[in-house]
Each structure stands twice: as C-alpha cells, then as structure tokens.
Image (cartoon, rainbow, N blue to C red; front, top):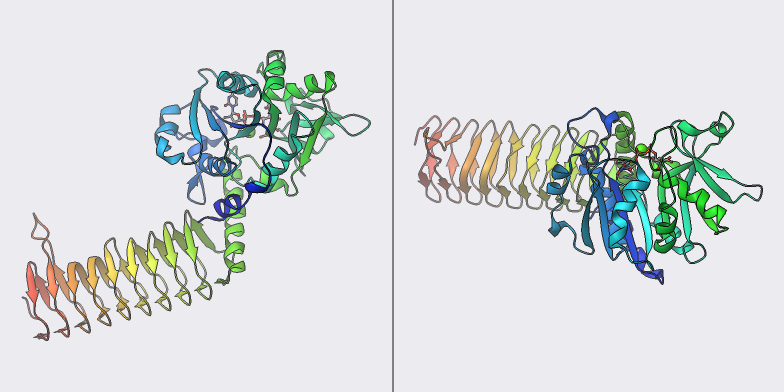
Length: 448
Ligand code: UD1
Ligand code: CA
C-alpha cells in the first residue's frame, strides 16, 4: 500500500458530513506548458499518473460520486482509468467540449449533482494533496457554504491571489493576469481547490461572466459573489504549500517527484527500513518493505513489489514487480523483474533476473547470470556467467561457469529440466528440450 493510500484510508471515518459528498475533478485542459503529446494528467509522479493520485485521495473520502471533467485528449485519459478502477465511488466522466474556464468546467458536472450535496472541486494536477487537508475542508462545511484551500508561497507568480477584508475574511480571488500591482504583492494564493454547497454553487455559477483578462469563466469568481451575499466563507491554509503545488511544467513535475519520493522514504524509515540516503531512492507504485531491510543508494523499486525483513539491497539495483524473502541479499547493479525470491538468497552483483524467475530459499545467483522463466530449487547455485531460461532446476544442484540452456532453436522455445544434486561442469551447453536426472554429473565443455 502506497504512502498516500495508507494515510488516506485510515482517515475519514471520524467525520461524517451531514450532506452527501460529490467530488468534481477538473482535467479538461491541455496542459500546454508540459509541451507534450501526452495529456498533462497522465504524466507520472511516483510511477502513477497525476490524475491517479487525486483519484486515490478522492476515493478515500468515500464520496457519492467522482465527476471527472475531461476534454483535451479525453479518450486517452478515459482508457487509462476503466470503470473497474473505481471501487468505492461511482465514476461519472463529464465532457467539456471547449475549455472555457474552470467555472465553465464545474458547470458541466452540476446537472448530475443533488442540491443538498457538498461539492469538493479539485484539479487533477496536485499529486501531493493529503487527506487531513481535505478532511479539514469538509469539516468546515458544517459552518459555511464555501471553503477555499489556500497557501502562502514565496513565488505566487501566475496564481490567483486571495483578497481579504479588514476583518481578515476572504472576499474574493483575483487571477494574476487581472491583478493590480498591489494585489500581486499578496503571497496567499488560491490552490484551485474549493468546496461549496451545491445549491449555492449552482446559483453563483449562473452569475459569472467571462469579462476578464483571459475571457474565461473563472470558478474563482464565486468567492466575491458569496461575499456579496454575506455568506460566511472559510479559508483553510495548507500547512505546507508544497502539498497544493499544481504541476504545470516538467520542472514542477520533477520537484513534485522529489517531494513525493522523500515522503515515501520517510514513511519507510519510520516503519523500520534503513535507507542509506533518502534523496537517492525511487519508489514507484505499490511497494512494501519490512523492517530491518537496508536499501543502499540509487535503488529503484517499482510495484507491485514486496521485500521482507532483514534483506540488503545493494547500490544501483532495479527491482520491478518482484517479491524478495527475508534475509536475502541483492548485491550491487542487479536487475530483477517479475521475480520471486525465497529466503536467504544471494543475488549478484550484476545479475539479471527476468520475468518468471522463481528462486527457492538459499539459492545463489552470481555475477553476469541471466535467468528467465527459471524455477531454481533450494540451495542450488548458478554462480558465474550463465544463461538459464525456460528451465527448472532441482535442489542442491551446481551449475558451473558459463553454462547455457540453449532454449531457442530459431523457431520455438524448449524446456530444460535439471534434477536434484546435479553437477553441470563449466561451459556446458544443454540444447533443449533436454532433461538431466537427479545426481548426474556433466563434464566441463559438454554439449548435451
Ligand atoms: C487556477 C485558478 C487559480 C489558482 C490556480 C492553482 C481559476 C480561474 N484560477 O488557475 O486561482 O491559483 O488554478 O493552480 O480557477 N480546466 C478545465 N477546463 C477549463 C479550464 C481548466 O478542466 O476550461 C482544468 C485544467 O485542466 C486544470 C485546472 O482546471 O486541471 C486548472 O486550470 P488552469 O488553466 O491550470 O488554471 P490556472 O490558470 O492555473
Ligand atoms: Ca494550473
């Protein structure tokens, strides 16, 4: 379970807002500053699309439905998230044909939303958003029909500024392009995340216009309308402004990635994993690591992966979709993909374990060994420079240096079976299909 998922999933039960919750996620824009053929919301942080981070946070709040407003490249986005992804909430794809502004985007979702609901409006490009912040917003909805999520930042350039009155209540948001020089000095910005009672939201959005610097229907204009009506407005400031950081270009994408990786590294360290340098580890997707495992520098681990306790992962290893049993060591510069590793196994340095590798306890795979669809029995050794593919190997078998299972005849792949307690001498070639019985000895340089 990922960090974000785990902190969201233990979260929500203690607040039950009286009104049903509907979540609207804005994802229709092009994201032109990414300069990409791929829609912005499919660019990844921690191995997951930006939109997926926001969807995970949304699902954890157990809303009645999640309305995702799509437009630009919508087929690509929709095909990435099929219905089966939405386990806890109904999904409603809402199409915004023309991107006429954030207010216009929210309007497209309103017909599907009941007047009594609370509508939480999120943008799809804020991958670091946390549960506790959204919960605080929902809680404040008991006292006011509109809540803004704001942050104080050192560089507010390009963002909407929060306007407050003499008593410090928020009374409006002015977009950077529409702001006066004095307003541009305000360092409290609009995160783009708001929550409003649906009936009020419908009334306010019906009144907004596009007479502004960008000729867009701004969602942010509802704040002034609410203030004019005398509605109480709550503003919640994110404790850490990075949390609401929106991704608009690849520089911000890289900044969010580092931030996210640091969070995951911290969570692992807090759970008992030693990480030699938390700035030099990359965890992508669903990855779990048990206590007293040590992860050295420049390691990339992609999910779904699980590493049991007391393992050592050496520098520069790449581990994808693999499981590693307790007390195993992966020496430097090894690559594991779709591999199952038993307990007290030794791998590498410089080993390449390809999909379908399954190593029993106490196996030893040495340097410059490649395996693929290879099931290797307890305490067997493949120590040097071998290729073992489409093969099964029994227990306590020794495969000498440079042994090759010749699995491919130019047209088809064939299987090699090697039994228990076999000794295969160095430089032997086993031309598959071939089967070597238990206890056999094969001399060095043989071709079988
Ligand atoms: C918006 C806010 C600004 C805030 C900033 C935070 C408005 C008017 N401004 O500005 O106050 O500081 O976010 O990042 O709301 N989108 C649609 N349809 C549209 C337009 C936008 O779905 O017609 C989506 C985009 O895909 C994006 C989000 O809404 O996910 C925000 O749009 P963007 O154009 O990035 O707004 P900003 O100008 O950044
Ligand atoms: Ca933006």
